[in-house]
Image 1 (cartoon, rainbow, N blue to C red):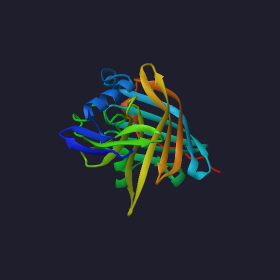
Image 2: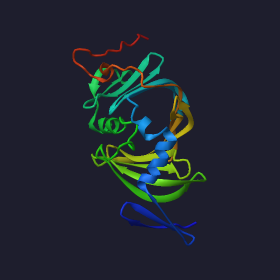
Image 3: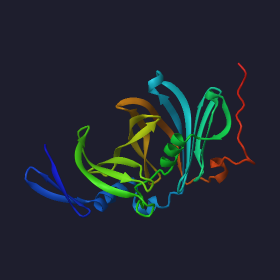
Image 4: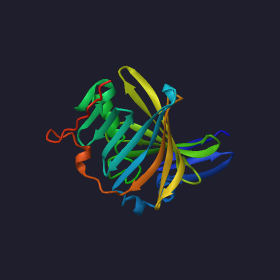
Length: 253
């Protein structure tokens, strides 16, 4: 069914089959907040820890263990482990750094500019919460059908100018996908992240599976096995401190 749309201020007017109706961004986000557990409760999330499996589909299904730490408003750390190999990507709110033993990087070092920008952009787990206070902007792009489900398509422009598009179920408010462009050198790639297998942890609705696609092809999947809300979390795990440098010793083969 063809849908035409026009904008009147912050309200998108959708015209479909001769029927005229409207939805504001705030109304759509209200459903999203409600589905996730409620805006007031979402504002109480100060930290999250997730543990599970990371499956690299693009490399024959190689499986790694993965642990992710998040501390509001924008600190993050992700660790991938495979046998004696380890990868760490972290952001302390100012500096993005890494360890990557597969490449011989056994001590923390600053990330390249491109990798750092991606890590910083993904540090905030809930970009849509209080987005105005964070300096971001939203634009309602319209409605479409995603895998048989009617969704609202919303573009979020971060205060640094980078963009991410969210696809929210028009009925339940749940996020069904987000997408953004990733630049590596002179090449641009479309990254699509598909959350699924939603379960409640206490009151918070959490996707226990994440599929990442690159230019339409599945690259990896995450299957979370344990999720903790508001665990105690020391800032030092996010920092690349010269006085507390981490070091990974590789086993001799």
